[in-house]
Image 1 (tube, rainbow, N blue to C red):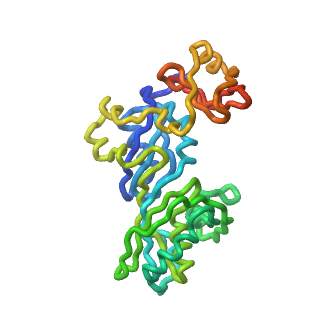
Image 2 (image 1 turned 180 degrees about the horizontal axis):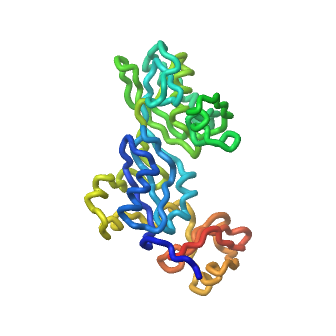
Length: 299
């Protein structure tokens, strides 16, 4: 007999404006405590130093998590020039100082070098695995961490504000999967012949989710353990807005639920979302008219 999962059947996305000083895991715990959902997970870690958009998937929405993790993201961040830290942000120990403060014109001139596809070495304090262990754990243990450069995509990068007296520049970036803003700040400073680290980092958008959909943890605490919290959920399909939807009949839906394929020669090739009525049925792959489910929703 199947073991019944504890908690309430809650499906959808809750978009949290994560405050400073709190880990993403703690936010997930708060959401689970408030909603009592059976399953909860986040779509892309934000460090305690960072604030902003943290998409939280509940129930069946967790099956669409890869599409959020892979989505482009918007950040605002401030580089403090003159010193470098071992974590490339404000929380780390200073490892170099005395660097010069670049001119605003120099910063603007160099930014095009960091747009498009660039090679980037992730920070030593990152979750990337090295010989089976997280890089940040090795770094905290005092071991030297050597990570390989990898390609990342920077769609937009612009200077929003420059404060010569503070030695700081605030920038806006739209970037692809796997981009580390801390590395971007470090590399911009090095290209300018100085040191730099991130003083402020705020995530403004993750895929289809922006600040206009976000709720603060304070607001959630006001709602407490009530059905009103569910009113702030975004539908599961919000994470799939960029994927073509294909309507199927109830008999076709039964075939998908049983793990069978469908023959849909007129459907768009590639990844599609199967809809049965108004409800999402599955994320599927169409190859030459043969449709096979990738993730089936239990709605």
